[in-house]
Image 1 (cartoon, rainbow, N blue to C red):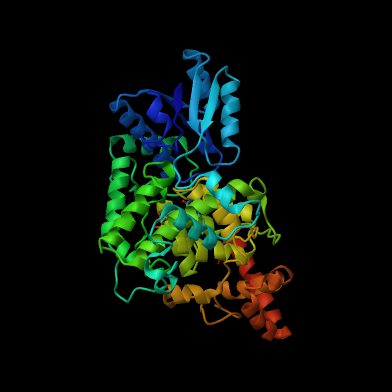
Image 2: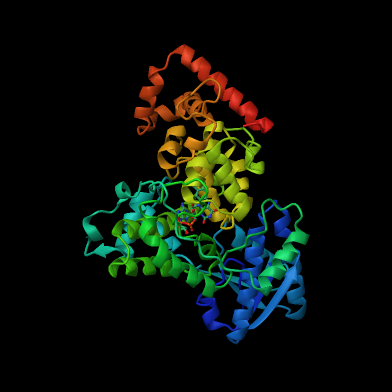
Length: 498
Ligand code: FAD
């Protein structure tokens, strides 16, 4: 058998690599033409693959590395040299991908065996046993179950510290003058520089800046990134995980998603390192629990929800939203301080942290009325850590409320949330205290208009009661002004004058 190592399965301890020492890798370039992918995403995947090839060869594997336009072309060349070969690969998490690969291989006279993907902390069987035949899921329930099953941060049958959740300590904003620890930079080596050069030439339409490229591209670098996070950033990760600070792109976030999603770092390693830091007294429980919740809770959860909800999930649009993305998502040019910062971070680095993704980028698109599939495409092409299995549930379900498969209410808010959790509003020409009229914060009118427009669907969801008590207090004149301002904002969004 020959192990086909896919580009997001770069883990030398993956099960198939333990039993076979012949390896196939195909670096397929045409997938990068489907969307104007961020050049750092393309460079990251190709550079990490080439480094992994070299690492495997050093470990004694016999690696066939094919650069081709498509998997089909790569397989043609492979099977010309190795007719009838039998391949084995870990089942890719994106919908239908394994089956498509199997067909491509079979059409060339070979066979492909798909085995369990062991780059996650939990298996499909674990989740399916827990979920039964449910078709809507809640992360909190899953997370507690996963904590119990894995024993992470457990004290006998209960959670360490007595609580499952320390969110009440994790909503702080940093004091004035605070600066986050510097983010680690992994300077591009010769292989990465060559790949960046290739990407610049091959993908002239890619959206975003190819440099500064600072992402870990090897397992060694990914392990250093994890150590840096645990030693330097973890203590403040918890308290400031929901904060946004003008001019700061990383705060105390781990910046590990791209490495974990490529297989350079196993999520188990990240969880264990954080648990150990807590046990050694080097990190507070609210930070350690906050991180474990993201990885063991959210990351595993969205993977399984995606698996069970596709293909409907990708097209879900229960609110019938039809707007195109505002121009500012492409240009970054807008007077809205929060939006220009968040889009700027994505354009410059292929990254924005969770609260920018949820409460600025997708929240704004949600209340503006953007079609979830269009927003999904934008996230998919713009982020270094984007893969269909993880981007789509986050964008379509969590961010756009295209379906209630993973939450019972939308993550929609007015400018108040941004004002509470950031220092953006004080330097923004829009007034967060105003809903209508000149210079009113665009979030505000859009938010109320969104609640009104979707009243039939949202009022009954239970958890929206408080919001609708505010809706009920507004009179017709207020609604006319809100509607006029929301229409104006959408016109400005389309014209690129937001
Ligand atoms: P940290 O804030 O340090 O969190 C630690 C880790 O937890 C992350 O590295 C990640 O592995 C995991 N994690 C946390 N939340 C989630 C989540 N909701 N889903 C999956 N993993 C999670 N994550 C991606 O990996 N790829 C995406 O394409 C992606 N798109 C997103 C789109 C939207 C609209 C939203 C709201 C979230 C998205 N996320 C995505 C989840 C999350 O925002 C990122 O994983 C996180 O911001 C990555 O930065 P970090 O490594 O510094 O994370």
